[in-house]
Length: 112
Image (cartoon, rainbow, N blue to C red; front, top):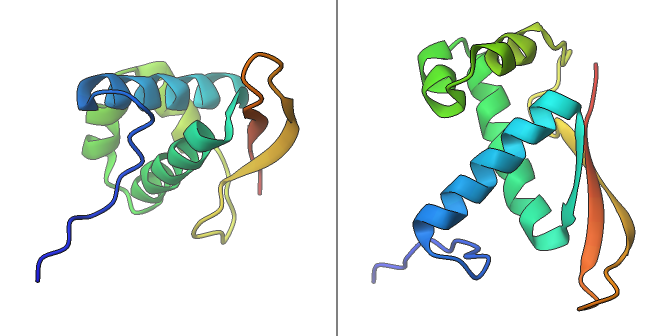
C-alpha cells in the first residue's frame, strides 16, 4: 500500500510554505542566526542541511537555482564545515511567546 510522505504544513498552502522556508534560509545564511518558532525551525534546519550537503558535493547549479543570490551563494561556499556531513545548524530554546505560548528558538549556523 502506498503511503504518502509526511510534510509539516505549518498551517500554510504549499507556495506560501516554500516561500517562508526559502526566506528564512536566506536570512540564516546572511546573518548567521534567526529567531523563529520550533516547528518552523525543524523544517528550516532540515532544508539547510540539504542545501549545505549540495554545496559540499559540488552541485552548485542546484544551489544557485535555490538561492538566486550570488552574495549568499558565495558566502555559503566560503564557510568551513570540516568533516561534518549533517548538523550544520543548532537550535537553542529561548522562551515561549506570550501571545500564544509557542516555543521560540534561536537557530545558529555552526562553524568547523
